[in-house]
Length: 186
Image (cartoon, rainbow, N blue to C red; front, side, top):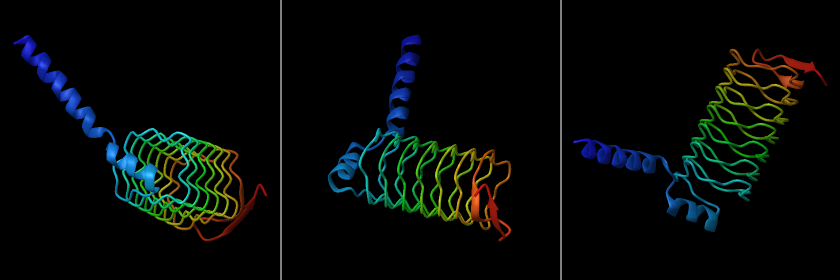
């Protein structure tokens, strides 16, 4: 009986963990074509990958390692980036509209002129991130850490900043949630 229970536990563990991993065919498709809309790349290791102008619309990038990746101009509209690692990544001019970026690590990431409207960034870590000129209108930034982030020229209209941390954050010509323009730390 103990052996049967142990065998069932091992099978459950293997099946459960494989269900959470990326589809190798999707990863191959991304690397060959720079396109993988609605693909499953969850838990993939894309550390320092060159993904300029990649089409990842609606992709599942849950818990994916994108640290240091170049995603300049990438289209991640509606992508699921929950728990993804994007520290030191370049997301300049990227489209992250309506993306789920809850609990995402974006430490020192470049998000200059990115489109992040209507995205969920709750509990995300954006310490030292550069969001200059970014559109964050109607985004959820509750419990997000924006310590030392650069929000110069950023549109923060209609956002949720409840319990967000903003020590040392730069606000220069930033459109605030109430529609006023803040010129602090210019």
